[in-house]
Length: 376
Image (cartoon, rainbow, N blue to C red; front, side, top):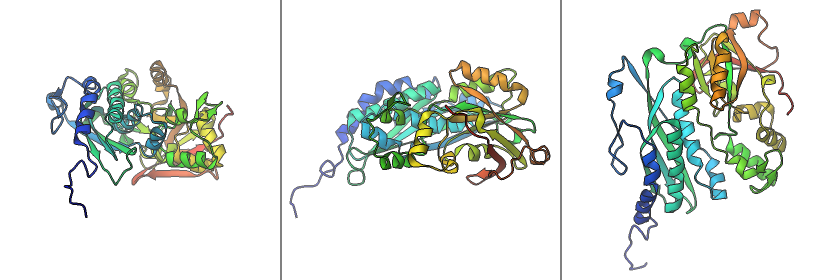
């Protein structure tokens, strides 16, 4: 037994490194703000002036929290840490937009085996840039050093955000109507779901992250680290567009297209979506072919090239597509919505094809994915 005194530093926690990380990230965080933010970085709590909310008729607060899953393993393996923040922000704030709310502010949490100030600053810098793109204030966060629990180069990130919407403007199943159509908004790639499957597939195939893949036009690692698209501002713009009455939105994350669309449909409503309307980008085909992943499994795990869907009246779909594409997001008609009674009577329901009903505890509508993808 040693007689040497035990200090926090000898236990593996470097408080000074944490302070240096805060200094390095200050400039980035300062840009991720809004006029309503009160105070600055370093307080015990982030503060936000809610005066505007108080003037709303019936303000409904919306909140969400998430992480980025095992995508952090790719960032750590490549020693690239300034993009994972886009994944975190996208996964959090875009869940809030689903109900029509405008995300207002966000906080983050980083747990690591060892605080390397430059690495922490890179992570937070990415979070701040993503918040700036989304129009969300980054009002605070926490970095925790966990020696003995995480290896020195390991970390995980999580975040939470809050938004607001007028009660009368809440989107969701209560607005969906017979005859609506489903419009797809393209993803930027894998986003931040299904990386346990993806990593297992590429590992089993013996592919290294520095392998150049012709179909990607870059290395495997660069493709896998492609940041999650942030839909916040484009979707808020779409919701506010004259002549477009968005009824429901769905963020295509864990569970895939069918399950997430079913969550925003009311019981008794059926959506038929058609694979022939799009070709999944090369990364999805590569993962499926390399791992011989069954179609049903890959569709339950990965977004297949669709990051969001909007449900709205059929005669407004072209305008919605135009608005989305003006913001640089490819969009297209994906399918149609009908009551289950009309769907069965009108031949919309395909025989022998799985129907997904609700998901994640939601007793929602029914979704059927039909057809085959066009070849690339």
